[in-house]
Length: 200
Image (cartoon, one colour):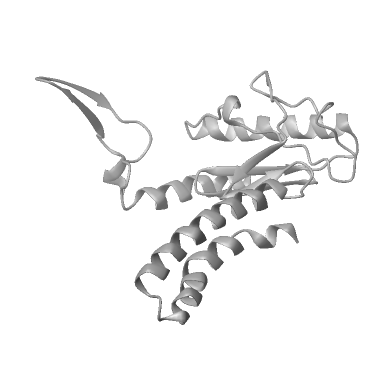
């Protein structure tokens, strides 16, 4: 395993020319050991000491930080502090966070937060812009936790998919009624139910 990190080079070819660079970070796309090595590094982020009321969730290369606060100011102060800790952790591992790809989703359910007056949270001196929703792991989250956008998108997709599948099935398998049920169970139901438990 130690050889994996020694004398690594990236060679770039263009026409008859080639350039060689030292590889000091990252893993080859599609490598067998890449996901394991990334998990070894990312797992240490979960050990970063977080204040009470903060929770960090990781999946692949996505991090979700949940921060609770007693007031708008308390929430902003606590979230900025946690982000500073994560940025310091990243610097230790030669990783950086991009503020433009970081989404601030104030949970307005219950009326304590508002999208028109969100908490002012900074990341590397950049104020994060509040968003009314985002997609995470295939589920569309909205600030009110209604999941209406997610359900609407699923319904549109299922309508199109079921129509196309029914056209194919009715053309070639008109005498096999059970086929429609198998198609529903195998193709439509998993898509419909994916992420359904998040609304409970």
